[in-house]
Length: 446
Image 1 (cartoon, rainbow, N blue to C red):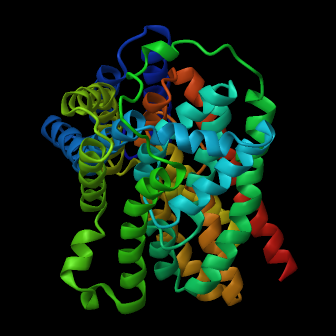
Image 2 (cartoon, rainbow, N blue to C red; image 1 turned 180 degrees about the horizontal axis):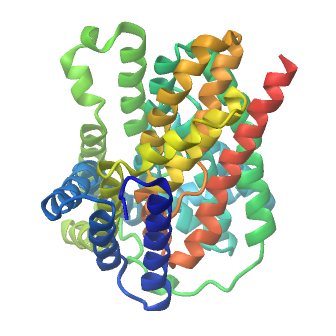
């Protein structure tokens, strides 16, 4: 059959995803192996020549690992240092104070605030040790804490500049950035309340027996421990550094920002400085033995290796789908539908998101198709901003096995593929769906 035939493409993609799920869920094949195998077969079936398939897999792995590997590694070490020095306990104890039912609300808004200036992946890695400790403290499943946090991270990443996706879409659609921020906040709040707070309370608000507390990294051996403020600063310091660089680039233009500031505000450097400062502080001021810190850091890197490999393989699968032009061909077919601008924008972004996984690629693709419609539609400036939110919402839904973020969540929360589909995939879909319907309601109101 013709690899450019939309029906053939849809069938191939459906078979690829189904085969991947069968391999991982039913056959219990390691996710890394299954992803690479399915990427190879899908690339060949979609018309790429063998050399191009191998190149796509290599490029996809490199593109993801170039960022993820460093962030995950440094984030894991920072988490280990905070655990050893008592910082994670101080954070979780403060958040656990008060009603257990208030925890999802706190975590949702924490995620929303943290992810506005920081990449989803960076925020997830930094906050994960606190999530696990807090879940143990309040005797709930980790998803009771993690699901609302993920909802907040996803909503901020999709809807609220200065995250890269909405900024790029706003530029492509010539939308006013201030209106996009306003519309993004109006869409994000109901999205995190539904996809985070309500979902977590409904699905995971059940006391559980806490097991394995003695199997975790050894308790702190420090003469004193970090208090809440010091532990909070460990999370805030890299976030503030990254955010300051983003704000300066937005206000002054990247070419006007001093090179040293660009250097210090890069996530790699911000995390490296934080790890260095707290590692030194734990050794010298808290008197933690160097050997203890080293063992904790090395132990934290063991699961990080699995996270990095599986996430990279998800990037390889995504790259094969991009290089084969599968997403673009399906989007062209959908573009012929006669629907409203907001619905069209959401549908195209959602379709590309489901097919090839990357939210950013889905946003850029949908913006390319939506921009010509906006040029002839004569809609208001606020509706133009709502079109940005509709695209972002479509690019958020149905995170599944071809999204590297899916595997990051799966591995960090120690979830099976099936459990990740029932939790993170549902959360991302609720966040995207509620965000889109909020945009529709706002378009009728204003």
